[in-house]
Image (tube, rainbow, N blue to C red; front, top):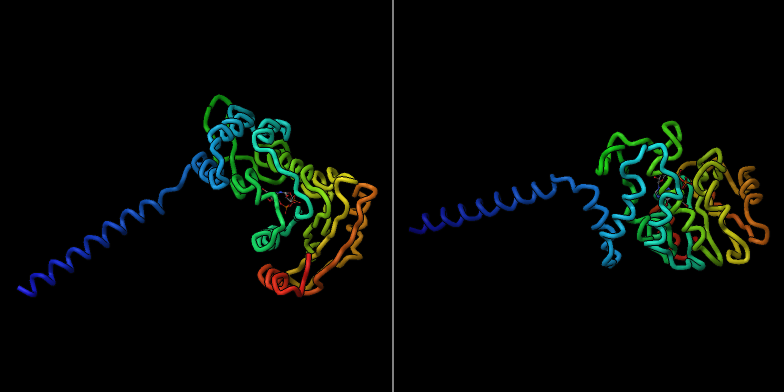
Length: 263
Ligand code: N1C
């Protein structure tokens, strides 16, 4: 009798494990489609109009030739999700995405990826096709300009970065890569779009922080930083500091939190 009960309990446990395993496997294994990802991410910002934001977004590239989507095609999207002024906390970056993300996550600094549209589209690829209402996530032009400059993803980041720079005010920070041969690249989005839209007296100062994971190649005397200063609007105060060591993003965050390093 006792043995029968043990067999029944063990059997029930096995059934529960199998049911849970199968349903979990199905959920994890199923890739969310692009539209659901967009709306789910958008809704984390407690917006009730994410379906409308999606419609406005997709109109920019759906049914289009993927090499003719310009940054202006996202103007209506920017109007649908305008940015609040970002005073004394805008954090720009170039070639230092993981550093910027870790720092922004642990501090009050705000990167574009912490805003609704930046967060919603971070890391995603999308494009359309002439004669189709669908959004595609493969077979799209690549980020580099080799395919074509006016592609849906690149034009979005250019437009969103322009809006982000327009919203910045007071003191801003730029996190640049000290391991790079050119920490300030005039062809990057930071160098070609954002820096040009920072206007004095709305923006008072820019602090450049050079971070390195390896033995740093560049310090604050690097010639490309002279180009950066020349690109800055007259009146914006410039300063630069370099950590001068190889630090991982998590070490920098730790030093920041302990007050041994500041942005
Ligand atoms: O070309 P970049 O860097 O100088 O662009 C970074 C600059 C930041 O200050 C951001 O405000 O432009 C903005 N930006 C993003 O926020 C962003 N998120 C994700 C630009 N690009 C962004 N991405 C992706 O990073 C983009 O799809 C492409 O793959 C990179 C470009 O980064 P970069 O060349 O290091």
